Image: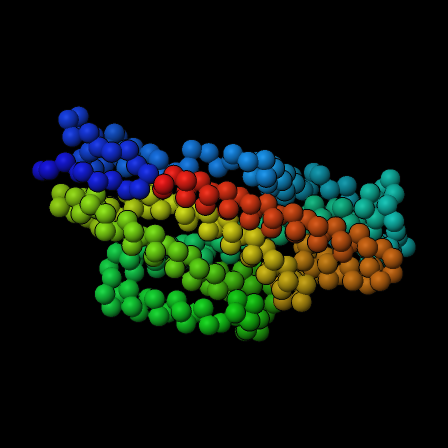
Length: 310
């Protein structure tokens, strides 16, 4: 069997003398196929490092929300309505007398879990469709590509509103609708990346040696396109957070009294007009910080991939 003389972009050339060029799934061969496809480190700039730190802080707050929140986020006290910042209420209260800081802390859960559900669902569906289309080609590729273009014709927010009208308002319905709406973005990127790998000589060598298509896809093709999928998913996370916040603002997403940053902006409109802006501005600032952080991380990963391919 001739040694593999070409490898995926960014990988280490094989040495036919020591047998590491044979993509037999062995420890050395697999490592060589994948070694430099992944960026050595996602960081490298102050902005990306700060973004990771901000997101890590948000995740910790969401996980430990019951222990960090100073008050019950749903406790209504009309006598404390629209209080300013005090020792007991560091960010004041909303029009129902609920502690704004406690609602922000608990709202981090739905505000992060919602986009996570959207991105996870869209990634699973999109990667599956994109890889199948690239691998099979022919009429399969044509049918799947036309289906993706058809979904592109429907704006994600409109699709979410239509699905909410059928399933009733709530986080699950909006997450499901947006996952479907975001699938074409993941599928198109995955198909493009998988096509680039599909026609490389190392894939042909694996096929000649008798490896099955699922084994080649799972053990070699997917690991090599995973960094690009991760970069796209990071960018989609930020957009999904904006869309979910917008739907909650319109009343289609998270329903009261559950704490959510988008819903808090909607509920804080009255307080904003009455001179108590924190109940609306604070969740807005947090959404902006989270979206910018995810965007910077996605751009950082994409930039590392571009440099590795040169």
